[in-house]
Length: 289
Image (cartoon, rainbow, N blue to C red; front, top):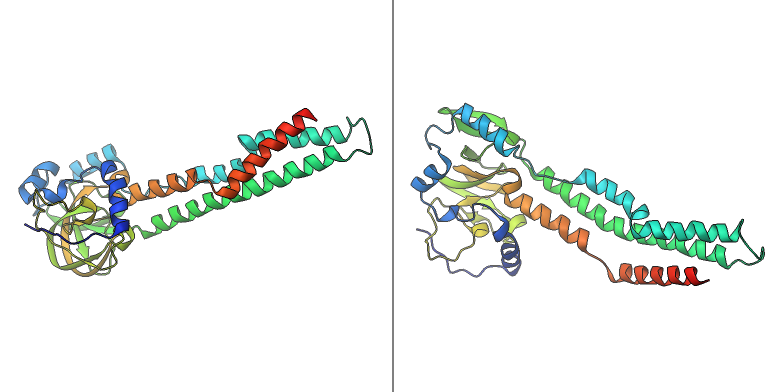
């Protein structure tokens, strides 16, 4: 059984601490082959039955890197018109009306100046918030572009090529040099297999893959286990096979994708906070003038 006392990179620790509680199957690296077969009701020499695979696909959904890009497009628009921005637009329109045609003094430009200030605040605040959302959108797109489009699996005792979106848990996935891993899988064969997990774990050096289970008392995290190949990981050399243990939303890359989106969405810069503070002061001032 594989055991390790190596020092983990700080960024890998940070990611693992945040992700490990949200990942299903984070104990599969500590199961032996017999337990893996039992967990996924699969056969290493035959693979899944096609009918069973179709039912699992219907039950669990497509094996795809999810992205809420369509919602983010709407959010980009909402950054200029929704929520607090709607109040600013209301104050801006009211200020214009107080200048013309409701002005008591036609030469008083204070209301017009207020309207211009509100408009500037709306534009600057909207651009700042949208720039963060656009960065998130680009990150989501980059995650999607990393996914494999086709994959070779073993079903009904035959090797076949299918769309990576149709992979299901329990599938026997073939791994080949130069390809990306199409789903999270527990390795059952590794012939000089080396994996690049740098994007997922922060480890710059390729991982020498192994099929041996991790010892029960070994504290090696699931995301750094050498017997697990994660979706989008690049196969640097060699070949192998793995039993798919997670697809779609349950994969590590999807967990990271969600974290990236959540982190960027909730992030507020110092400048944005100051602009929001100034906006509230302006609204209060406009109300009492």
